[in-house]
Image (cartoon, rainbow, N blue to C red):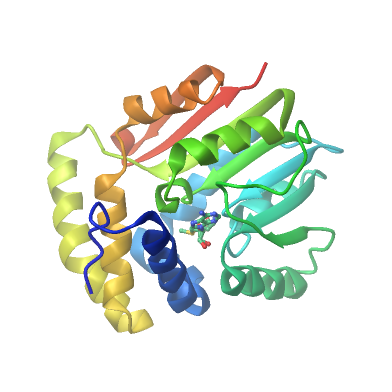
Length: 239
Ligand code: SAM
């Protein structure tokens, strides 16, 4: 299977991404721990500290998958809508919520590029490890801007490119050699994990992505690199 997607039609990329997350849904949480050595938990904790969800706020967790970000935000009393294009990921999320006794979340299937929510509805929009999978990223950013209230905030957590040279080499070797093997071993799905690594490599660098957020209409755009930019937290305000 080839996942080079500059050569495939946009609908085809969306379909392939759908296949990937349907295939990995059941093993998704285990794989995150295995591949990041548990570090994704710390990145997500930090991300939610930046978002500062507050009691009574309406927050959209886009590409929310199995609920990691939503569960962390729900602790602060905000009303959370978890939206994802993939029903299989949401189902795993709903089961996890039930097991943990977390209720009150709204789970809904949606494509980030075309949202069914009204204009100026949410106080915050979060997207964690989701935006790089979206086919039309500028369209998704515009939709994020549309559904936010004035004064609303946008937060994105995503893999990026580390600016620490030695570390970049180590990470490159790790991701290209080891991650697909882990995918095969733990989820019996080497191709999906090859795609995930490839999508990280193709994602725009931190400054370029920050510019794209500005282009969608956000102001005070910022980027906070983690591990030299291996992971990055981008944010912006709608005024
Ligand atoms: N946010 C969760 C987390 O941090 O654990 C899940 C991240 S997972 C790597 C990426 C998610 O993006 C998947 O659940 C996938 O279905 C979703 N996704 C991909 N393309 C999407 C799109 N166009 N619209 C909405 N969700 C999308």
